[in-house]
Length: 494
Image (tube, rainbow, N blue to C red; front, top):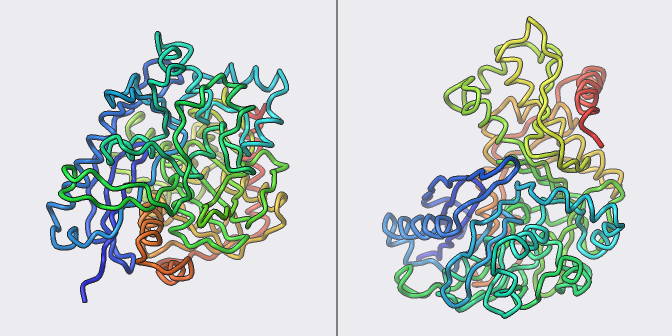
C-alpha cells in the first residue's frame, strides 16, 4: 500500500525551502533558494515580499518535478515561517505595498522606549506575553501606516491586508481566497491576547492599527484552504501552520511540560513547554502559545536570542576568517581555550533575558596573543553562554529542570558547539535524526489535519536521537567560563 507524503514550506530569514516528508518523517526531497536581505539604513532590515513568494513557489514546483510519484501522494501542506516579519499588501491587486520589514529590524526602538516610559509595557506583557521591543510586529505595522504615504487611508478604508509571512504565503497559495494566520504567529504580533485567544482591542488602540487589516486566527491544525490548482498541478489541502520556533517544538516532540528544544539558526530560540496554564515570566522571557489544537492551547516560555549562526556568517563574509562555515569547528578546536576572548554577538541588540535594542556586538579580552581562531572559538562558545542565560531564567520562572536539551538548526552540525552546550548547561544535549525539525513540525501539523497521524502520541514515535553529548568539564571550569561571559556582557546590559 502506498503511503501518503507531506509537503512542508519552511520560509526562513535567509532562505525559502520546500521539503517533502514521508509519513514516517524521513526526508524525500529538499529544494532551497537563498533570500536577499536589504539594509536601507543602519539598523533597518527588509526583504522583497514578491521574492519570498516566487522562491517558495519555485521550491514547491521543483520538488513536484523531481519526485512526481511521491508528490502525487501529498496529503497536505504545512507552512512554517520566520515570525514577526511584516508584510502589507493590496487586497485587490495582491501586490505588496512596501518591502517586508524583517523581525531583526530596529527602526522602532525609540518608539518602544517611549512605550516603556509611558507605562504601557505591563499592559502589553499581560495581554500578549511579549515585551515592548521592536522585534515584534505591531510597531513595524504602525511605522508603515504612519510613514508610507497613503497607507493609513487605504488601511482604514479596508483596502489593505496585513500578515506575517505565513499569511502572505497562504494568501498567494490559495489564489487570494484565504486571509488567515495561526495562533502561534498571531501571538508574535503584540496585537493578540494570548489568554482570550483573540485580537485585542486595547492593543489595537495603543498602536492605532485598524482591525480590518488583520487575518483570521486558526488553530495550528486546521483547514487553511487548498492550493490554487494552477500553482502545483492540483488543489492540495493546507492543514498545518506554525511559526518556526513552535514548529520546531512540535518537530522535536516536546509535548510534556518541562521539555525544552533549542534551535540554532540565524538566531537562537529556546522554548520550554509549560502546559495549559498561561504564566507570565518574572525574568523578561516571553510567554507564547506552543501550539493550539482542537481549540486547546498549550503554552511555552521562550527565550529569543537574535544572533547565533549569523555571527558565524559575519566572521566568514564580513571578516573573511574562513571560506566555509564548517571550517569554524576546525579553527575553534585548533586552540586549547578562548585565551580570555569573549564575543557578544549583539549585532541587532540583545534579546532575552536582557532586552537592550541599542546594544551592539562586542569582542573583549583581546591581547597580542589573540588569533583568529580565538575569536572564532569565542563566537561559537557564545551560543552556549546565551543559552545558559535563558535556561537559568526559565528554571527560576517555572521550577522545571529539564533532564535533557533537544537541539536543532544549522549550527548543530558543529560538534564543538554541541559539546560546549552540554558542558555549559551541565545537561545532555540530543540531536535528532531529522535535524530539519522546523519543517518536520509543519509537516506533522498538516499530517494531523489530513489524518495521516492520529494524535501527538504518534509524532513522539517519529522522533529519534542521532547524537547525544554528555557534559565533561568540571564545575570550577564551568563557573570560570561563565563569569568571564557575564563580565563581557555587563557593559551592554541596561
